[in-house]
Image (cartoon, rainbow, N blue to C red; front, side):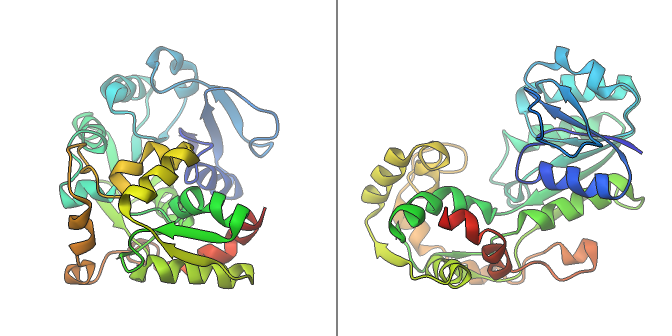
Length: 289
């Protein structure tokens, strides 16, 4: 099967590419700028940009299935080009926030554009990426072996990026997944303090957890730059998912245990979902560097 993977250099996309190659599929990887050695030799790299749909027709030619990274502003045009090129199946990298109703203007419009196309579709809706902790905590752990956070007891179900990729690959390559929206979480409810402890265990080193105020954490994230700065207000409770102003104390009062069991990749793959401890072991060297 000829499959085009968009967002191919991302945390999920690169794992999707790797698995599809191992399975013997004809894999194309869409990237804004081709870099030597970025993908396995078997992958056919295509330069293109989902925000500029006019760059996509060459990459889509002859493609049967598409792994679609979410770009809402151009979703309808991209999906239209895919349909015109003969794509018959689209798997969307969406978000668990669609399932809960918090996301109405980013991932949801992409899902709707794909559904309206008449093509086979599957939505993969991960919750909190475990990889976010590498983006947020990696710099201070590498520099000082410390994490500074205002809510040590705040907890969620971080999901391993490989579990997300596993589900996406099945939806791309197997029958029986059309019309499904798979919400994916990790298998364990873990506090932030416990997550730091598991990273420390994986590294074989001590990591301090320093409790700071939300305002202090915001300044730390903004100074850190990158993902932390871009998402500081949302992650720390100063704004809602939709960008409205909110009170950080509301995040502290939320009790995730009231949600009950959360769906994981196991319901789709038949294999136990990967734990955060495994994720920490998989990325221990990236915290050390």
